[in-house]
Image 1 (cartoon, rainbow, N blue to C red):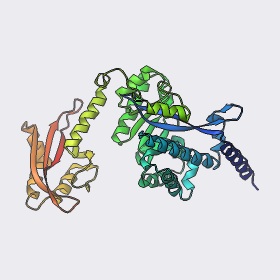
Image 2: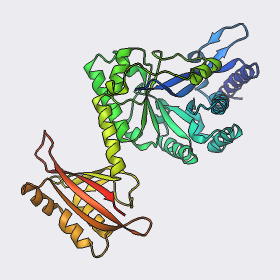
Image 3: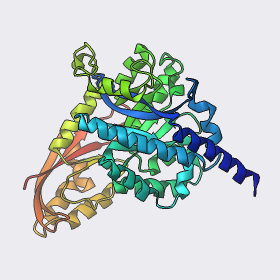
Length: 402
């Protein structure tokens, strides 16, 4: 037998013995809404508590476990404990998601999703309330496999969180490609207590691109009011850290979740609403009214979709050449409306309208939807100005009329 096999066997035996003796306990660290301070989620964390009361912290045994597939035994044990807790909370009327950590070794595990769904089904836990958490470092190796693995997990209905983002060699390209739901910002990015300008710039950039990728954000290791105050200005969604709560045993966690008042800051929510957060609410309201929003640079002949939800058709590319966008749009129009659409929104016509001093141009056409039915759509292009450039820019707001 090889040395690695013997090591795996010994470690697995130790972990299985600890599980059998009920020495491994699931602790929970609550996650709080950054604005209201209410509990909206949690992370399950393991603690090894021996019969004599000695507490062995995870960093004393997890790194060794993660060197081999032996960590999988612990991961599945914690996933089951998490499902038990979610189920018990739901029976008390508390509906929050809890994340459970999984190592990179699960990428090659056969029937991973089937095993995960079986555990959730056993405790009647809706899949969206169990969050699969994977570390950023695990994403660097075997990226193609990771992406497919995450797709399968999300296809089954579970959410996926990238943990410790910013702790290692963060790849924005990979975060772009991996279809995760949540980005957890590592505590190391808060090391200067948000007093460093460079630190603030980095954090602002991370939260901005996460929002553009429709990812929820969680800041880990938040310990001061200064950090909380700055994170609120960045539209951070959730806070996890000692400022609110340390990891706690299950019974104490239940009490926190069941408190009627939960935790609500004394300030008026509007008084702590940062400009960026207020802007997000404004954009949310716009997207409710206009299911398709396009930002275009007529000078550079380019465009990208700012929103693309609940529109009649989703066949249009998310970004590209503006002239090609108009050709594509015209092809979806009713034959009687095609010429009107092209005459109104071709780039030359829009540039001429801008030079004439017009603030906007608008037209109502019938567009073929993905359902095979023509829908009446009102499209309005608003000319806007950027302070730093002379390019002619437009924002298109499209509304389905019928």
